[in-house]
Length: 84
Image 1 (tube, one colour):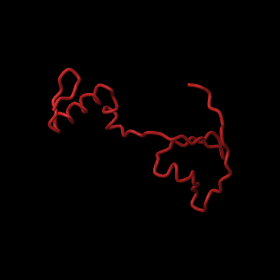
Image 2: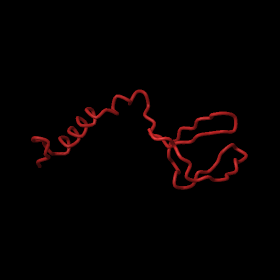
Image 3: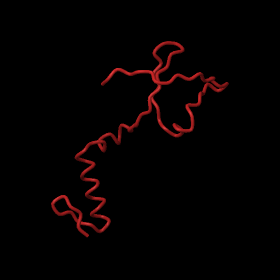
């Protein structure tokens, strides 16, 4: 992984309830917040997968689920091509 470079720096105010806004661009996104030391945080967007669903995050399982979805919707598979 390449070393991270800081491209932008912002001054934000932490509100009375302890929150900061990262802007509407990130509204609803999940993030990982690491506190490196008191007053120093590293915030990254992330895709969080619950432990009981982690087995689904696997390429083989994804292929099977896609095949099942297409079969269920009236399509059949023939040599990796969808045929109606």
